Image 1 (cartoon, rainbow, N blue to C red):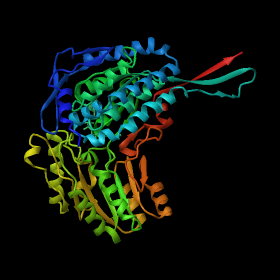
Image 2 (image 1 turned 120 degrees about the horizontal axis):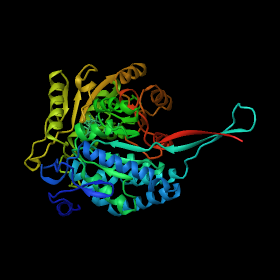
Image 3 (image 1 turned 180 degrees about the vertical axis):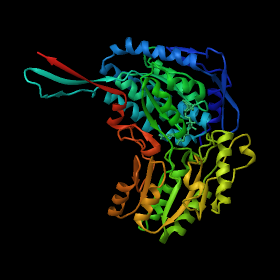
Amino acid sequence: MEDWSARASELYDGGFRPMFIDGDWCAARSGAVIDARNPADGSLLATVPKGDSADIDRAVAAARKAFEGPWSKFTPFERQALLLRIAEGFEAEWESLCLSDTLDMGMPIQRTLANSRRVLGMLRFYAGQAVMIHGNTIPNSFPGEIYSSTVREPVGVVGAIIPWNAPIAGSVWKIAPALATGCTVVLKPSEEASLTVLMIARIMQNAGLPDGVLNIVTGHGSDAGAALAAHPDVDKIVFTGSTATGQAIARAATGNLKKVSLELGGKSPVIVCKDADIDKAVPVAAMAVFANSGQICIAGSRLFVAREIHDEFVRRVAEFASNLKIGHGIATDTDIGPIITARQAERIAGFLAAGADEGAEVLAGGNRADRPDLAGGHFIQPTVFGGVTDQMSIAREEIFGPVISALPFDTIDEVVARANATPYGLAAGVFSTNLGTAHKLAHRIKAGSVWVNMYHAIDPAVPFGGVKMSGYGREGGTEHMEEYLDTKAIWINT
Ligand code: NAD
């Protein structure tokens, strides 16, 4: 087993890590800082600037200057070459990036390392897309020789705001399409996990990104984030985070009618039909929630199981949960790492208590994980609740923790109605060996992604996003490029 702890102390020593504006590595104008702590043990990794509206103003001005200046002169082929150099930089620094994420937000190192294919793929996918942007010539109804055509133009300065639960993929999925289309970016990472995003900016700078094209302002949502969302010189906001914050951002964006895309929360259903391959479905259905300790937007936290197989299936999911290893993310055999903050762990513990109070049966876990070696961190046992009804809070609200609510069902029509009876519509899973049933469910469930006999697949080439209160806009695929482009019509009277 590789020992990551020595490398961990080399990476972060409690010192100050500046933010990145206009090519400069700088402190906040106010001089204030935020502590970046390891959620596994509470230790101080570093401090980062507590940026506010003054820093956002500076970053937006730099992004505007770069957008209208040097960056606008880059050809699509030059942007492509730059993205490919950035991908090489990521590959060279991959282990340090993953270790940084594990230390800063707790994701087990095995999982961060395994994400490489997706993140490197994103950079290379958008490098390919950079040279595929084109308009059309369109026949029109005017008499004479009047020609009409379209060109695609970058929307301009993009404000990107991301959560803490997947900083590498979360930031690359905002920055790479912006660079591919010729936009510039001001990115505000979460106050809970900024360190890896700063490392990413360093890699991009070293790859030759001109000053001002990417700016990172670290800080809190209530000041730096709100200032970015409301900024009159930002043309587009791309946001990933909770539904409540997404609503606040959409409201703030009305001032200059900037465009907005929102990737928000979920309460995703996983439906296990009576003809499912149980051996294959049990670990996938369990990890649909327990991956990253349940701190993923697509967590399949409502487990609907056909009554005929319900008891056996749920017993096996509970057994699987009880065998997961809880520990520090840098231990290579850890399955369940820490929860990001004491506040978030408190919130999850509240749902555990509510589930028990409302009459659900604890089949696995059900408590905080208190062991001497976990002191200082915030750990929750992977939990499976049986006997859940649709009305219980654990079946309705996004918990963002390692908690499964198991619910029996009798018919396909019934489970479709129950699965869709939620304000959210981000993702869903279906397990069935019957192609007809699988198709029927995949088409009738209201969600941005439906996985059949699998879960979690996210790919740069395939669009991802939500419907209903899980947001609007898509990341991935050619749809994603549309989010960063405007269409201009050009008319020529010869
Ligand atoms: P959050 O909404 O609290 O914060 C997300 C980001 O928004 C942070 O950077 C925060 O500083 C900033 N922010 C907070 N208030 C703001 C404001 N008023 N104006 C501007 N910015 C503000 O979310 P979180 O707790 O960091 O992350 C968890 C949430 O994110 C969950 O709901 C989860 O489902 C969601 N999420 C969704 C996706 C997706 O792709 N759909 C992916 C990951 C996480």
